[in-house]
Image 1: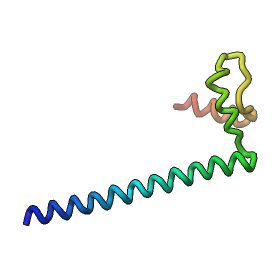
Image 2: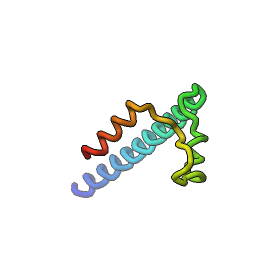
Image 3: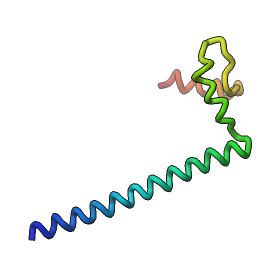
Image 4: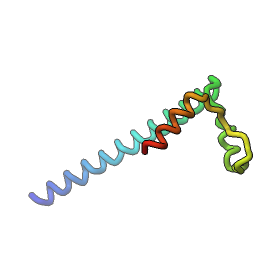
Length: 81
């Protein structure tokens, strides 16, 4: 009887593994679609972010400019944490 339980657990573990892999594949394709859609709609330009590795000196311009209100909020968050 103990062997039957172990065989059933191994079978359920295999089903769980395949369901997890399928779920992760769906999430990966959704994320790729999201990136493609946001670049096509003009919300983000991900090619600019690739320049961060090449241009990372302190005197370089930022990739995205922040509004004054948004930068104050981020400064306050940094001060409180």
